[in-house]
Length: 434
Image (cartoon, one colour):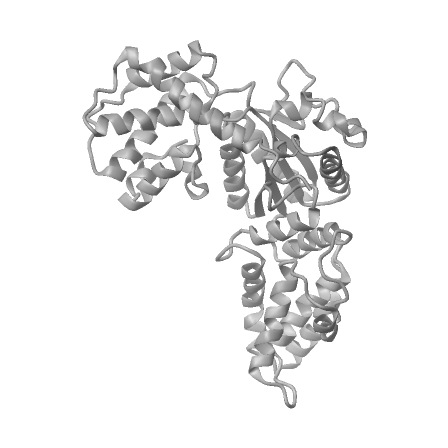
C-alpha cells in the first residue's frame, strides 16, 4: 500500500524526479513501495514462496504476463523489494539491445552489475567488499594460530560449497590473499592494487588474459560455455554469506519476438536451459516478464519446440491459479478503488514536487471519471495510461486550468494512449538482430 507518511518525507527534488519518471511511464525503482496498490493476492503467494520454499532450498521459474502498460515492470520492482526485505540477493536485468537474452554471458555480466542486497552499493564489487568486511575482524588477529588455521582452510571451505566452481573459489581466496597478505620481495603496492583490480574485473565477467590470471590459479574467464556454471557458483557464495538465496528478475523478454529466427531460437534455448537448471538448483527464483504474444504468437515460445514442450500448459487454465507458473496481471487488473488510491499518491507527490496545493481539485470524482473513460475505451487495465492521465491533469490544475472538463476527458486519454502506443512500438522495434 502507498504510505502517506513516506510520501510526506520526500524532498521537493526527490518528488520532482519521481514525477519526471512518471511522465515517461515508469516508477523509479527505489520508490516502488510508495505506489504499491492492488495485486496483493499475487504478492502474498510470492512472499510465501520466498520465505517458505526458496529460502529453504527450493527453486523455481515464473512468468509475469501482461500487455504493455499493465504494470509488469512495476510488479517486478515490488517483488525485488519483497526479496530484499526477506534477505535475498537480487538482480533486476532489463533485456535490451545491449543485454540480449540470446547471449547469456552478457546477461551474466549485467546481473552481477545489478546485484543488490543488505550491503552498501550495487554490483558484485560491493558484494566482494561486503564479504571482506565480514572477515576483517579475523584478519586483525592474523598472527594468531586460530587465524592461520582458518586462513588455511578458507579455500577448502569455498571449494566444498555445493555448486562452487574451482575458478570462482580460487578467485575469492586470491582476493583475500592480495588484500591482506604482506607484499612479496620486490612487490610494490601499485602492483598489489592492480592485481585487486584484475580480480574485481574477473568477478564482473571482464575479459582478462590467461597470463594475468595464472598467478591466482584461475584458468577461465567468463564465456558462453561457463556462464551458467559461474551463476551456480555465485548462488553458492551468497548462501555462504548467509543470504537467503538469489532472485533474478528478467524484464522485457518480449523484445526477442521481432528478431530473426536464429536469434529467437538462441534466446529461447537460454530460457529453456534456465528452466532446466532451476529444476536442479537450490535457493534460486527466476522471474521473466512477457506479453501475451510470447505465449500466443507463432514467433513466441511455440516456435521453439524444446521450450514449448516445457511451457505449453502456461496460461491454458480458464481459472486463475495463484500458485501456477504464470502470474497473469492482464487478467487481474487494478480495480477503480485501487486506482483512486494510486491517484491520491500521485497528487501528493506532484504537490510536493511543485510546492503547490491542489485544494482537492484532483478528487475521487475526477479520478473515477478517468477510470470510467478508460473503461469505456477498453483500456482500464493500462496503469501506465492512467498514471499519464493523472499527471497530465495535475499539470493542468497546477497551471490554473480546470481539470474537470468532461468534453476534454476522451481527448486527453487519446493523447496519452498515443504516447503509450508510441512507447510500445519503440519497445518492440527489432533493434538488436544479430
